[in-house]
Amino acid sequence: MFRLRLTPILGALILVCLAGCSTTRLPAPSEAIADLRANAKVAVAHYDPEQFMIWTGEPKTRTTALSMFGLIGAAIEGGMQQTDAKEVGAKFISSTQLLDPITQVENRFVAAWQRELKLTAVGTSNLVKNDSSQKLRQQFGEGYVIDFKTERWSVDPIIVGGFSFETITYRPSYTGRARLIRLDDQKTLWQGICEYTKDDSLTPKLTHADILGDDYGVAVKAGIQTLADACADYLWRQFFGRESGPDFPSTTVAEETK
Image (spheres, rainbow, N blue to C red):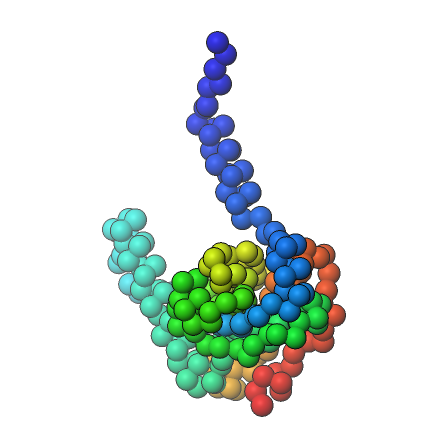
């Protein structure tokens, strides 16, 4: 009898393929879209974000000391750098009043989504503490929930040729999530993800002065708002399985700071 022998390399390739297949972004099921177009009840929700971080890229004297402890030292240093990034991010928010862009993502997506589906039974937005489908059913009852969450937002360094501040520039990064949940059976019918990193060129590079917040964070805010618009549009395309659209004008800083 012929038996297929699974070598370590072949096994690894299969695992990679399975991982790639599991992350494929699929459009919402047609039956859900048909139900929505029949004016099913839809609630809109969003959640508090993960903590905003600014990674300055500044070398720390502790790095050399911890390097002698190998992987354990690297893990400790990584945790300390994340704590530093959260502290810098918190100070920036305090001085600039930077807002989580999830409401911008939500508003833009829902406006285009509602127009496309010709919905009339969409509720107002709700800030919700728990994103479990069971809790959402308890809060909203029947129909559907379309929900949004900022998974990660930060400013990350682009380091070229060393650690001098003269050679470091920055870009905002953003990861957002949206889901369509049917409350009757608490089933997630669709989930979309947008992810923009410092390597994406949607926004201009930032300088060290830009991340200090002395100018109320104008450049950082503009960059994050650009990513929020891009995220909303990308989620919309994922939902409908489109290659382009929606045809909406860009959000301006003035619109979000009124």
